[in-house]
Image 1 (tube, rainbow, N blue to C red):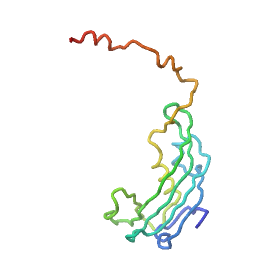
Image 2 (cartoon, rainbow, N blue to C red; image 1 turned 180 degrees about the vertical axis):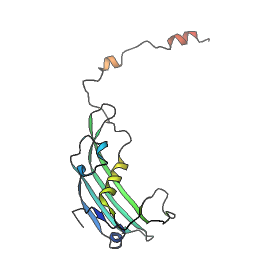
Image 3 (cartoon, helix red, strand yellow; image 1 turned 30 degrees about the vertical axis):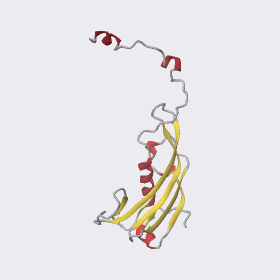
Image 4 (spheres, one colour; image 1 turned 60 degrees about the vertical axis):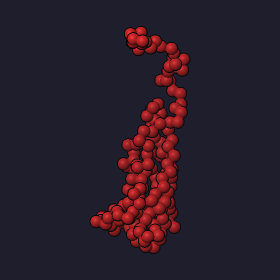
Length: 167
C-alpha cells in the first residue's frame, strides 16, 4: 500500500496487480474545486483499491474523506462540510459498452492507459458537493432580524379579499 499518491496512474495495470493507493492530497492543489470553497486549507484522505469484481470487470473501490470550508447560502457565513465519498468506478476502455453494468453504476472510460489520479479525485469531490450549502442551524449574525420583529403580527394583506368572498 502506497502512502504517497502519484499524479498519474494506470488503472487497468493496478487492477491486474490488485494494488491499493492511500494518502493525503492538499485541498490547495485542486484548482477546479477552489471556486466552491471559502478556504483551501487542509487535506483530503484517499483510500483506493484497484481490483476485478466477481464478473471479472476492473473496478476502483475506495473512500475519499475530509472537511471542506463552504459558504452557507442562507447566512453567507463559512461552514464546515464533512466529505465522505464512497467510490465505486467500473473501468471501461474507449468504445467499450457499459451494458451489463448495474444501472446505478458509475464508470470511467479510459482514452489512454494512464490518467491523472489528482483529476479523478477532484472530480469525485466536486460531484459530492451539495447543490446548495446550508448550515443545519445558521449562527446569529448582526444582520439577522430579532425574533420578535420577524415573528410580529402583521396585518394579512388578503384579509380584505376574505370580506369580499360571498358565502
